[in-house]
Image 1 (cartoon, rainbow, N blue to C red):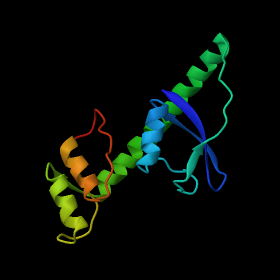
Image 2 (image 1 turned 90 degrees about the vertical axis):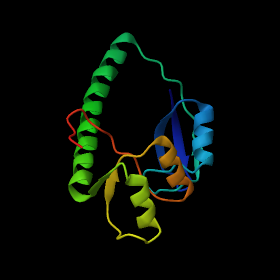
Image 3 (image 1 turned 90 degrees about the horizontal axis):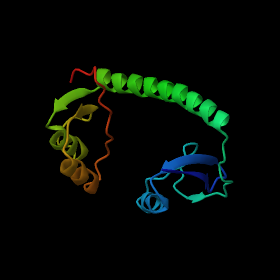
Image 4 (image 1 turned 45 degrees about the vertical axis):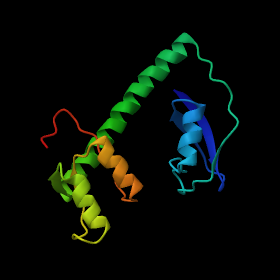
Length: 141
């Protein structure tokens, strides 16, 4: 993994992680890289200084990252629970129902369920907006 310092056309600076330089280029080309402040997809890499850490600094960073990860996971879990509370569970018929909603054949509403990788790719190709939500060990659906 590599962390890039990025900047959008509105001069907002932010950082993001990518598997490689090619991964950044691919995601940018597909429109997946956007500024978290304004949503602009006109994003470029900014100059970065190399990160050099001492052993103690690495320990402090690891502890801080652990706490930040816990906070982030709690926020993701809360968002997932809110989605489940406010959307209809459609199970394995997610792709079918999402298409019906997208094309106006079914009532517009929030839904969640399961989809295979192929179904998800088909939805994306059809322009159907969706996003995966994480499944936690204590989830019941």
